[in-house]
Image 1 (cartoon, protein in one colour):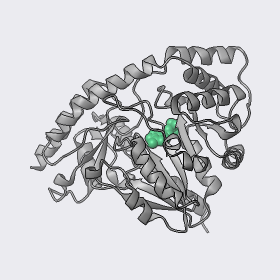
Image 2 (cartoon, rainbow, N blue to C red; image 1 turned 180 degrees about the vertical axis):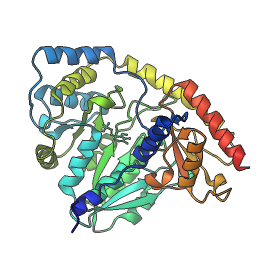
Image 3 (cartoon, protein in one colour; image 1 turned 135 degrees about the vertical axis):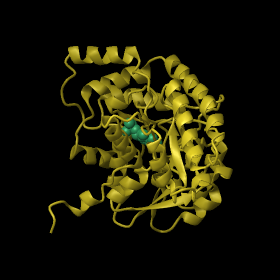
Length: 394
Ligand SMILES: Cc1ncc(COP(=O)(O)O)c(C=O)c1O
């Protein structure tokens, strides 16, 4: 018997973490690497949020708090859900944790038994499958295509549901495709779910405020209210307020689930940082103009890189409608030189000084994810290097 548990064997390193680690190693060895593997805004946290954190520390908010959020934070979260999404929730429906990721971890750990199935539209953020696997559930990828805008349709959802299906994961705007669902599309999925009362929905809305071309955000629970009482709506401060390092995510859902999630957190990390909670109150209750300005900056970067990536021989991508990633098809590179799959593609790109995660971790290959949460000069140089990598393949 080995020392490490079978459980630890089920905890995998994500594709983006692997790409970032490789980029760090190469940089340490003196190579110039543009790292586009991580999904975080390159902006700083707004000043008024930092000031609120400072005040909180000076006024003694440096102790343990309630496990899944202070009353002030829960009130700010409930107000946000009502104001921005039209969802009514009470403090007992709200949970705060150390990032959206911990919230998702708590929810899946609290609900999955061995063999339970989780439906995941492909491509999706790899953590959904990784956490499901860790919790002994079975990730069931449902392929989508560029033609359908990488969105799950009602028919494909219906076909994927089995008696073992516990959750459907939804994420709009999407990491990694930038797909954005409309209220109408959500209503069509809701109509299917009405016929399957045992299936629950996690709607991950963490990129809510990174939406392009004047699109309006559709919240799943508000769009399909008949499914709202079996929906966990997940959100967080990381992407909206450039607060990835503060670790503050939250959710609203049925009381029974919220209580079970708090028990998961109670046996692991306890409360999220008291200082981060105070900062999140200021972020959620504060002005949104800086968030909108940053979104315009992301849109300008998208408009800069998409034509450049499409001009590279063998690559093709759609302009994302939200979030800050482009999901790039590299089908045209497969079979060239030694390239057999998208892992070979990203290895080839790394040799040319660009670190990006390959599509396999997101459930749909052959692709790679290009993050434009990086200054324009970096993006320009990355596109130049990617073009060079293509031309070397011939
Ligand atoms: C789709 C999606 N959901 C949730 C998260 C979690 O973010 P955090 O744990 O920083 O709140 C991420 C982070 O990359 C993400 O891409």
